Length: 180
Length: 137
Image (cartoon, rainbow over all chains, first blue to last red; front, side, top):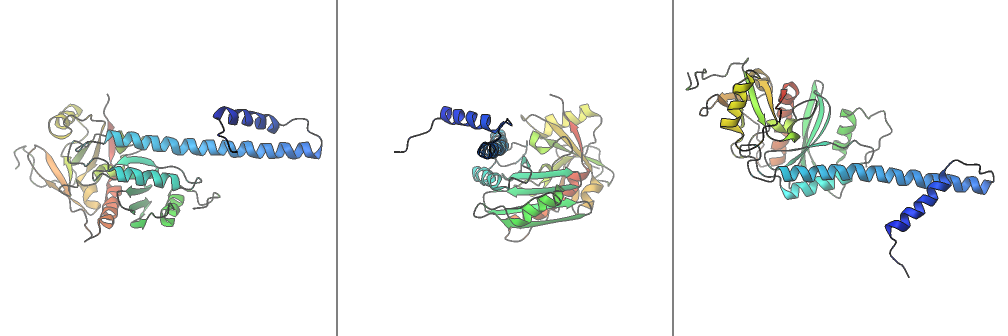
C-alpha cells in the first residue's frame, strides 16, 4: 500500500544521496557507477530547486504587484486595477516559459494588464502584455529595428514568436537555447 | 496664451513630465514602456509641461494635480519632440495648469490586442529616451 512520504524522509534520503555523490575513494566499477548516478540525482535536484525558486520568486513578485495595483486609479489617474484573469494568465505564462530563457520584469499597465518586459538595454527590449484574453500583444525595439505583433497563448506553450524574440533581444542566440 | 501663461502649442523642445506611482514602472536602467501607455478611459496619456528642474515645483504639481493620495516613486521626463518622433502628438489641455495629453495613439478596428501592440511599440520609442528622476522617500 502506498503511504505519504514526509518531507523529513525526503531530506534524509537526499542527505544519503549527497553523501554518495561526493568524490571519494571509490575504486570498483559498481562504486563508481553509484557515485555517478548519485551525482546526477544531486544535479537534477539542485536544478529543480533553482528553477522552482526562480519562477516562485517571479510569481510572488507578480502577486505583490497585483496587490499594489488592486485599486482603480492606482496611477493617480484612471488606471484599472490589475485584472485577476490577467494575473492568472501571467502566472501560467511564467510557468510555461522555457527554463533556458531569462525571466521578465513585470509592470502594471493602465488597462489592467500585466506587462512582462525583457530589457537588455534602452534600445533593446521586448514587452509583452498579458490581459484577460489568450491573445498577447507584444512589441520590441532592437536598435533601429522595431515592430509589434499579437500571438495566442494556448495549451501552456509560450508562442514561438515571443520565445524567439526573447532569445534575440537578450542575446541568447549563440547559447544552447531551445524554445519549448 | 493659456491660463498657466504657457503657449497653446507645445513646442518640440519642451520637456514633459509623466508621474510614476508604481515602482514597477521603472528599473535601474530606464522607464518601462507601460508607464507611457494611454488611459483606458480617454485613450490619452497625461503629462505636465515641466522639466526635471526646479524639482520643488515639479513635485508640487504632482501632489496638487496628478498622483492624489498615491506615493510618487519617480518622474519620467521626455520631450515633445521625442513624442512626435514616435508618431504621436502632444496637445495642451488645461486645467490643471501645465497639463497636456499625448494623443494620436493608434487604434486597430475591432482588435483590442492589435491596438495594444501598436500602442506598445510607440510607448517603447518614448521610453527609450525618457529620463528617470527618482523621488526619495
